[in-house]
Image 1 (spheres, rainbow, N blue to C red):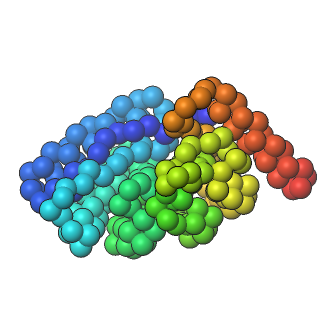
Image 2: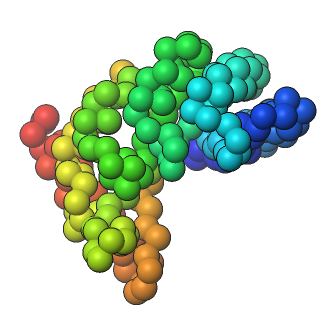
Length: 209
């Protein structure tokens, strides 16, 4: 197993010099990712309040294209996570206008839910662009999203995992479980998540045997 590692953040700022500086630092982070044996370098956007969606996408497409080109020199895929302002339609536009084959999605199942999108539908929508996965589950309690062990929340987790089972390039995909509890033991939640994941994987394997 090889990790996917965070390499930096691209600043979607109205100031071009801030954009360029963030790209430079993130490209420098690619070297570390390659040195430790990563196949995928994860990066994130930094948003600026004065940049509307049109500008955000224009800046992101330009910076992501250049980052993907730099990553290719290291033999790396680069992945962007669905998070906060990044929803399905944004990824659709990004992949359409930044058509680099080493740029993909870090598919965070819990974040789709929080963003008001169906994790299964978005997984199927971007199935062939997935280069890494964060398996997370949540329940909505009194207006707050509460992290829970896999299989105990609102994500249709088994169907999501099945949707990713036969990806065209499965060697690129890692499926770490993730929790961010507001109380209780993270270790216990992780043990429960891993037990659930083993059950699902064993069930799928037995069906395909």
